[in-house]
Length: 77
Image 1 (spheres, helix red, strand yellow):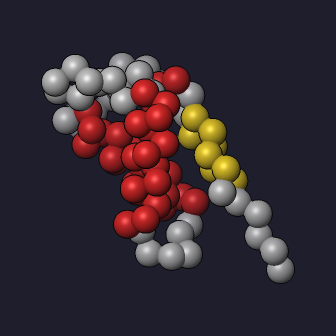
Image 2 (cartoon, rainbow, N blue to C red):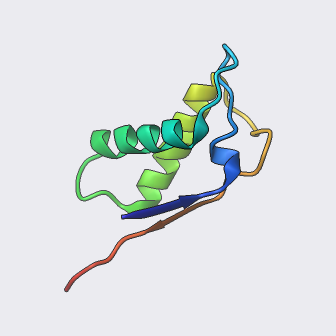
Image 3 (cartoon, rainbow, N blue to C red):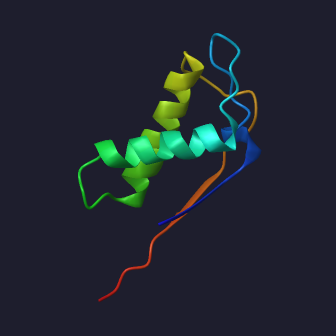
């Protein structure tokens, strides 16, 4: 899987003002992927990842910056 994301994913702050960062976002993405049933649909992964970003942030609602995710997976038939 390839995951591309905008800086809106990494510039999120927790209630204690800890910034998510690119490294933190990728770790969050890995944890999100692990907890989903396999094989995971890319749509379900993206939705769950946005929910996990909101959980890191400590509140739901509109983010301070736009969040763009692009997920790609090669399917061999």
